Amino acid sequence: MRYSWKKAFLLGMCLVYGCLSGCQGTAVLYDSTEGQEAEAADVGNGGTDGLLEEAPAEKTGEEKQENRVFVYVCGEVEAAGVYELPEGSRIVDAVEAAGGMTEEASGTWLNLAEPVSDGQKIEVPSREQAEELKKEEEEAQSGLVNLNTASAEELMTLSGVGEAKAQAILDYREEHGGFQKPEDLMEIPGIKEGVFQKIKDQITV
Image (cartoon, rainbow, N blue to C red; front, side):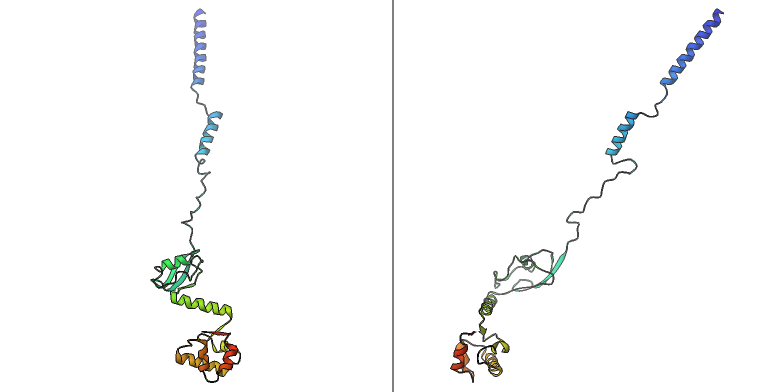
């Protein structure tokens, strides 16, 4: 009996020790703290399985298509021609694209800061041409009729000048290369001093 009791006691102790050892060796299937830390790290890395992705970067200005315009540059420039420029360019950019102005060019006639438009013609005048253009503008503003540039219709607006006298003025201008002074008008048959006195304040050369 004593032997059996000891044997039973030892067997019970072995069973208890075995159970305790088994519990210590059992793996943990889920740890709430570790799971939360893992999820936080996963989100910071862009998400799991590609669920969270970075938005595509916006295109830079250089990658965006740039609008272009075409302009014709002529006159007193080094290389007249049609040039393609970025939209928003100025006349100075068009002139530079054509090689710049020549030595005879008038550098002040054009407004170099003016924006260009698609299909625009930009003509750089010479200094002599600029003087003539300026004179024509002043005459237009003053309302005077230029005997060397006026059309027949414009000449007929003068007092005492009809269709026949207007044509005679045109013929004289073509034959003599223009009028040197307003008084030359009296050299035309049919236009005497009386007519000249009526229109002398309305004409110029």
